[in-house]
View 1: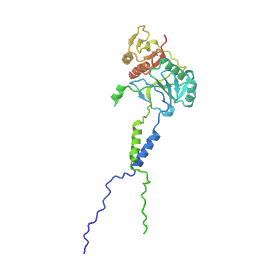
View 2: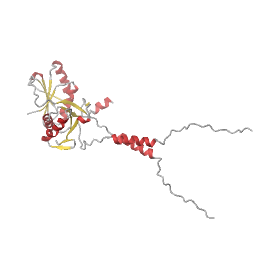
View 3: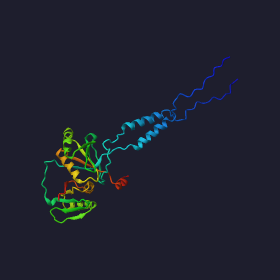
Length: 146
Length: 140
């Protein structure tokens, strides 16, 4: 006598495997945690001037040196306070080591020009000729470019 | 007959079902808060300290930035100055450059003027295509 039972067909699993979801999420998380660079050289509250002609700087990070000028005229080079007359002495050895050095001058928009001019004179004495005035793109232009 | 009953024990495993949720929450937090600091600004090349070039006064367009942000404009050897706003500088430069291609912009800023006024003028000049720009301190 023949057996009349129905055999259950083997079906392919229809669920998306989610067991490795946590692994993937952690992998991405670790990537972002490791690759995030918190700008340590910006602990101070400075407001940048705005400019339409702002251009992206295509220089290697190792060639860039930031010089900060606060609203009261205090100068910082990579977090180190530097007296105005010592800017040349600090920058010259760095410039000698790296002739491609680009100075990014990050001055507060309200600092008086005499402080900026003083730093520029010191930069010239240190034979640093490539200078960029750090600016942010005007809000109006930012909206237009979007 | 002695019957041994299995004691009910509290589960010893750490629940891992919400692990993915926590990880994604942290991931979204980092994605949202990460700011990639972009280097940007207005580029200029400073002259070498010893590099002094004599230029004819007729090729110099003077922009004298006052502490209140107004700009006194003077062309070459002319004595008369015109007061304009920083936003008008670009158009003036373009006009002057059309008639004289050797024109040099001499931007002189008052020592007490806020730095942003110099940037406004430099922005206008660079926006108008000026390449020869000299930055100086305005002497009284």
